[in-house]
Image 1 (cartoon, rainbow, N blue to C red):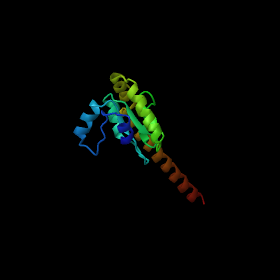
Image 2 (cartoon, helix red, strand yellow; image 1 turned 120 degrees about the vertical axis):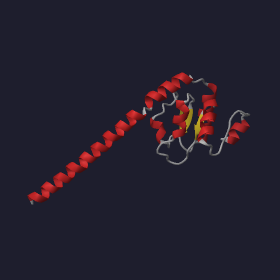
Image 3 (cartoon, helix red, strand yellow; image 1 turned 90 degrees about the vertical axis):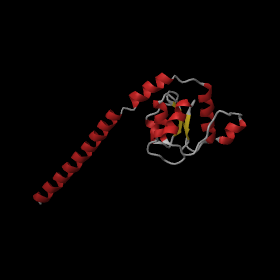
Image 4 (cartoon, rainbow, N blue to C red; image 1 turned 120 degrees about the horizontal axis):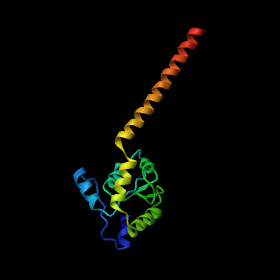
Amino acid sequence: MERVAERKGLKNIVFTEKLSLENLYHLMYKARAVVMPSVWVEPFGMIPVGANKLGVPAITSSSTGVTEKMVDGVTGYIFKSGDPSELSEKTMKLINESFDRATLIKYSSEKLNAQREVGELIKFFECKINHILCSTVEVIIAVLCI
């Protein structure tokens, strides 16, 4: 990606190593876009979510769990993991388009509501626990009936 940016003469792209949280959010807020080109399966990437919450579009690979919370073309772009030409294409597309910061913030706040997410997790685990308890009771009853 760095070579593509260099070849195309894009001098305003910053490639970084690990940053402190404060520097990360400061840099993201100032950014035109945030790119997370993970090549490994990642359950959930916080970088694109953080960028969207700051009103900055994100580009992420299809191998991340964050794609469930992103909408291609609305919150940024999703590219096929391991496909550098699609990553380059989506990056150029984003550079040539404009995303409304307020719309991104509003959308990401609606899409990612921590209280709702926790509520959904609690319901999921309650359902699993009830299923396990019911299965255990059925086994006990079956054993007692034998």
